[in-house]
Structure formats: structure tokens, C-alpha cells
Length: 401
Image 1 (cartoon, rainbow, N blue to C red):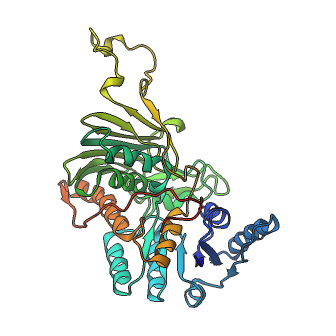
Image 2: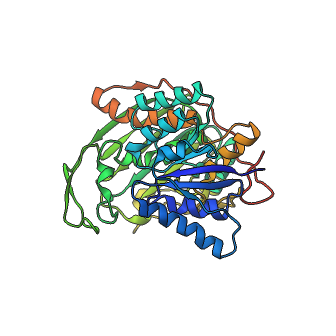
């Protein structure tokens, strides 16, 4: 298959893993050009590619575009890879679509449903592919969990419980302010990983109830180079709520930037079924472990209240069995969704990280705050069909037809 030529817009923090995987893993994608508002970042991206060439990789040297419109007007570019900051996604994606380019964007699709709706309608009107992150659901961990659920190993899904607990980014991120501005906050930042995984495992969501708040009006940056700066917090940073799925399952989700918590336990993801419980790996990763417990794995019923016998720190997952991963892509494979979309452009098949999924996720993410402000249950308007499960290919880096 002739590689699909991609222009990367935004060569910031997340671009590193995309550069690495496009150069070394995904053989049907060609990085044709790069662009960033800070030219040095674009040059650094090209330098990485040149370093890979020096190691013997037979890949082309990307162009450096003066601005995004130069990339959009390049007839050789087929797909725009939008790696800009969340509040910039809408305008970059919109202009790329208006110039006739397919777009794959980092999450989220847009900041609100108005932005998302306009982008979806624009892509459909012009017959263009529009997709985006997260693509972690395509990795070995969540795909293995999906297969176990689809095969009935835990019976009918009753519900799920997800949590992402931390105290924000100002102590370690070099430029953390945008996490606390429009389009930021823990649900918009980390929620896409959890919600996308829930949709892949359970299916279409039907409605939301949420409660949200902002615990701190200001944050003090203690990381370099902005050490000591005080930033205003404009968004809710502690969000919790319930998702009702069309099949009757109910999931709880909790995301926060306000809580002091162990870095080893920030991610929690459990799915409950009538015949067992499944522990899903951190949805911000591609690998495992995937843990399973069925009734036959439990010891005989205790003769006294187990809570009275508990001593010390409980081992929450004692007695669970680790399930071998059954799919490829267990390492950090960001760009997998892009490669899958590029394969779809060439073959005409459906692509997995598509705009229908992104749009449904966006409505869910924004409905928690809406529900909290209005004090009521929010029925969802968007519809969702699960995309196809992954298929193991013969060669790592080449997607199925």
C-alpha cells in the first residue's frame, strides 16, 4: 500500500511519541511535513526524523511549513494530524476540512457540542474522514478486556466504576495553565480515555447525571520555567457522576485535579458482570494487566463479617487471575488510530477512532457539568455504534484490510 502523506500541525509535548511511532512502527503512514507556531519545535521534529535516517531508517525528510495554511494548501498532503492544544483543535480542524483534508486530531474533538457539531457536519458534507484520539482503546489491554466481555466471560454487564485521582499538573508540567482554562479540567483532559474505553466495552450511552465543583480558585506553579506564578482556575476540577447505558448498565466515573493521592493508584477501572468482575488496565495506556475474578475463584463464604477480620492495608485484587493479552500493540502506540484511519482511506473500510465516537464522547464529557448546573438528568442526543474490534495482523505496524 502506498503510504498516506500526513502533515503534523503542532509539534509540542505529545508529538514525540507520534514522531517515534510514525517513523519506526506504522509503515503505511508518511510524515510529509510539520508546522508549529514556534519554529524551533518544528525544526526539532525534523531533527528527530533525520536522526532515525542516520540509524538506517529509509524514511523521507519532512517539510517545514511556515504556517498551517501552507500545509493545507499542499496538494501532496492527504491527512492533517492536529496535535495543537485542546482549545485550538476546533479552528485547526475546521480549516483543514475546509481545504479538503482528512483530519486526525488529539482529544477532544472540540471544546463544546457546538464546535463538535460543526466539525462533524463539515466532514460529512465534504466526504472527509474525521477521527481522533484517544486510540488507547485499540491497544492490547482494552481489546483483550473487550473480547472477554463480548465472549460472555463475566456474563451480562451490570456496571462499571472508573476513577482518575490526582492533584493536577502545576507541580510537574512545564506549562500547566491551559489545564485550568476553557477546555481543560480533569474530565476534558483525562475523561476521554475512560469514557472511550467504557463505550468500547459496554456500548452506547443514554444519559448522564453529574455533580461538579472547583475546589481551588487559584493554583501556584511549582515547576520550571514558570515557578512561583499564580494562575486562575476557570473550570471545574472535581467531577463525578453516573452514565446510564442503552443496555441498562450504569457506570460511575470520578475525575479530579484536587486530591492528594498516590501516583501508583491514580487510575481505577472495574467492570462488573453477572458472572464475574473484570479489572481493566489504565485506559491511558495500551497494555495490561487485565485481571479477572469469577465466583469459582473465590474462597468459601466466610463465617464472620469479613470487615471484622481485615487487618492492615487490604489487597484489593487478591485472588484475581491475570489474563494473557490476546492482541498486538501493548507498548505506547499513539498514532495507531491515525494509521488505522490511513488504512481506511486507502481501502474504503471503516476506521475505528472515528468522529461518531469522538462526538458521543464529547457529549458525555460536557454533560457532567451541564447536569450539575441544571440539577437534573441529561438525556444524550448523539448516537453510537461500537467500531470493529482489532484484528491481529501478520506484520507489526501494518493494519488489517
